[in-house]
Length: 336
Ligand code: SF4
Image 1 (tube, rainbow, N blue to C red):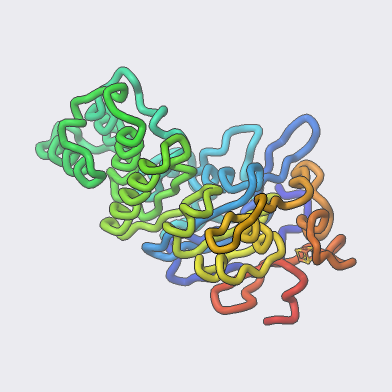
Image 2 (image 1 turned 90 degrees about the horizontal axis):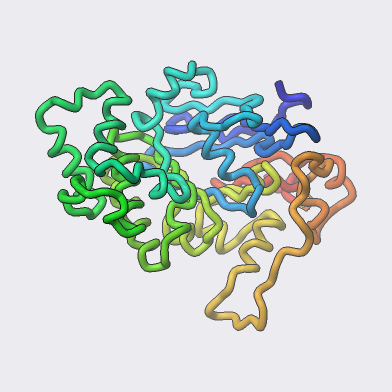
């Protein structure tokens, strides 16, 4: 159980949400103590929405991805909170119930997923194995057509089904992984840095493919990454993670045009701009705090240029300070 009092953070309530994450806590238990990788996260994902999660390495964004799929391995553990997918709390399911939900309702396109393809099996067999794992009769007529259709939907020739992974380029393999992820028409696709190993042109092609299949399916997507350019082009809303917490959530145009949290502001200011010539890129001074002993109060107070005395002791809660713009910062507490 969570050792400290669970956050009283205002939940982003969405009655029509496909996915609703409430007060999620995920800790990694090490010899030195509990590393609070995700420390009270709340957000909701609407049907058909593309939601981005950004933050520095170690901010907890990939841990959230694995937690939503219940794929956190020991010493990691979901300590508290709920993850409602189409009204069912995934955290409370048995392992077997959760195994069936994966692919069926929630699927992952992981970082370097293309390397997870079995090198000694043809692509067709990899689809068959996934289908068998979900109790689908792979001997039924039409199954090969279905695999061909899935490959066509991600822009690949149907002949790819008879190839081995080593015969495909990195971009083609990642498309196969997207085709596998959508093979059972999930309502949520989690894409964790899906293009990080690809060159820029292929990155855009893969993201375009992901957008197309997502729109065809009417699925929602959570895109995890740190490429703000890719986020700006792909997502509808963006959540900024810092030290295991979501510190700002806004529509992408508001996040880029008028970020409110000091960390969000520094993140956006650090991006290169075509209009404003910069001699050197601005970094964010200071280092990310240890999640083993996170700072008291606001986790950003050790680096924040606007820090006030009570920021050192009182943790700000995520609140909607403008329409669909949520911030966890004491600067905005009177702004509601
Ligand atoms: Fe800065 Fe205080 Fe806001 Fe934290 S709560 S971001 S320290 S102003």
